[in-house]
Image (tube, rainbow, N blue to C red):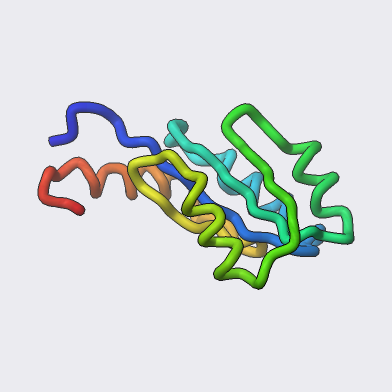
Length: 115
């Protein structure tokens, strides 16, 4: 068994998704598991994505915006920045199926044989 609760890092890569980013972030906020770091990598959006992210930003959310070479470049930038024990992805037009998804993920890592 784990000696402590793991920290989960979620990476969101986004570019010009002002129509969906709010729902994605809200989905993460509704999770019952709370030891979560959210790293958002924005590819220099030209719509209202950044203003929505700024409006929704909390202390556990970090937003970085700069041009990139596509989604995989953005995800790799995020991987270099996260500090969690478990890393997951939440794309800018996705949302979690229910409020206990991350709690269930964390529970899977309670076994010491999980890598």
